[in-house]
Image (cartoon, rainbow, N blue to C red; front, side):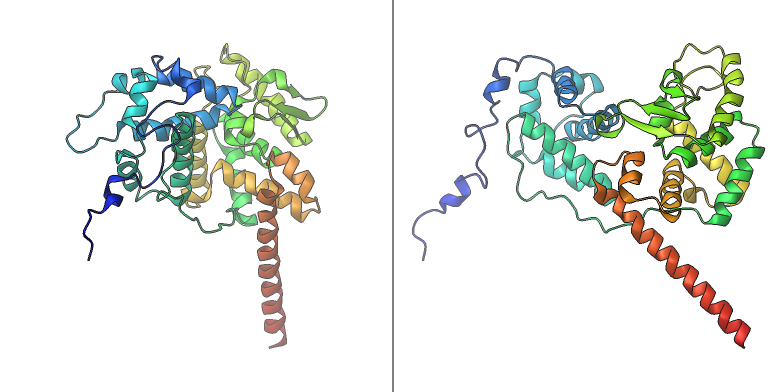
Length: 335
């Protein structure tokens, strides 16, 4: 029989890195009065985080900061972004329950989204000198093979793009299938980074903040040459290759809306056609034509070859389907 009070209730489940309460680490003590947003964004840039990574972090972190504890008022956008570093630390103290409520609010999100947002929160918590709660773990996501279009679907999409009234349709589809560019890289591609004579372009500050070379076929070169007079007629001040009718740089969302229209015209489900699906088709096409994984990795801009290796499984699955179709034909002919 216990005769003394349970002291475990009076101890934190985990020890903090600095003191008993939410205290800033020494490197931030003299900056605690500064606005957190600008200071943290500077930190991300210093670490070499890409623009897209920074945007992704901010989406998740703003939701975390806005999450109210019971009895709290809802933060305004101004209050959220203007608090200083000390106020932010007090707000998202890992032991006050806000993190838990925020994680619970993502119950309907995909595992990949939850993992990305937890990674952002973990980075911010560590930057503030705090320890991530051990009970909050990243969800395990099942291994998914990249989706690709079938040969028939790809042919229909190409035909729809070539017949589209939108002059960008044919160029966008051709360029992604020809280069494997990510949609963000395609939208950010500047005219000055393109060398038509060399059939190549330099991607600046791609995923992971890395530059890489992408190569064109004659098909893409001719599409770009046909597009340039149209682009010039739009009187754009932008440096990007792709611009809208109003002359502003093309955005990823606009490209996806273009994909939706092409999917409708090609009579395939909208979810089947995305810029990333076309990128997957580029990779599997290279593999089927005998390209080695290291070369495909460099062309895609993958940091790890493990990411590229997944395309081997797609190729293996395609091989099985071809074999089954061939076998069924043989059986029909015998019968």
